[in-house]
Image (cartoon, rainbow, N blue to C red):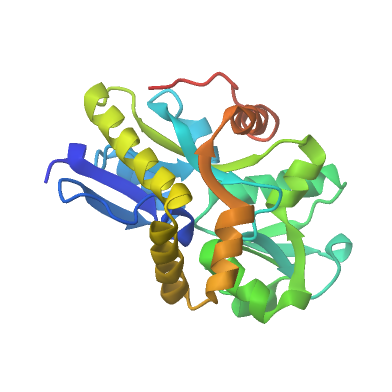
Amino acid sequence: MSWENVLGRVSFINCDPIFHSVKSNWKVLSAPPAWLTGHLLRKDCIVAPIPTADYAINSSKLKLIPEIGIVCKEKVGSVLLFGQRPLESMRDIAVPSDSSTSTLLLKWLLSERGQDPRYVEMGPDIESMLDRCDGALIIGDRAIITSISNPDLVRMDLGKEWTEITGLPMVFGVFASLSDSPVGKVNEAKEMMLGQYHSFLEDDGVRKLVVEGASLKIGLPEQRVSTYFDHEVSNLLDSESVNGLMQFLETVCKASPELSWF
């Protein structure tokens, strides 16, 4: 199948509402967030959600897809800092190798608090991370699962902290395509993905199936998954979210807030 008919997606459940029933003329390439940037640049797929920090680095080669993203509502629930000691006394923090945005955001949030711990890149395993470091940044489904099994270790929800400081949503991932991608194909992909998401929002039967599937996939109660989709993560990139995206690019990434759209 041609790369023009391949859609990248994050392997976490935060993309399940968009990709719950993709038509047979599309193939879905599932990967960790940071891997998707490489897939997009190599033309393994036509559209993919990539870390916002990766967009800042590669913005000269990419254009954004309007209306769709991976957006934190007031808190995100799946980008969490864990630790066995108070945040203020952490000397070193293990950060995952699969998310540039979350790591960059954490460094900025702690610098705003006047903290400058040592950061150690590691695989995303909470036990080995906390064996070596005072803190551990965990993202995605693992963060939700770990927060349920170890609620006393949660020290910060990074999405919540960002919103409290800026008053804006945190956009962890943007949907993008190469600037020279065929416009018709990109628009077709966008309309399909938005249609999938709106059916999730508006059709109780679809929503039930997506929640049940996500619950089975990561082994969490349906109620926790439902809360995540209802109150913590959104796939709609509205005007306020765009403002949050521009703020992150300028303030945290030290990049131009100018956005290029399909």
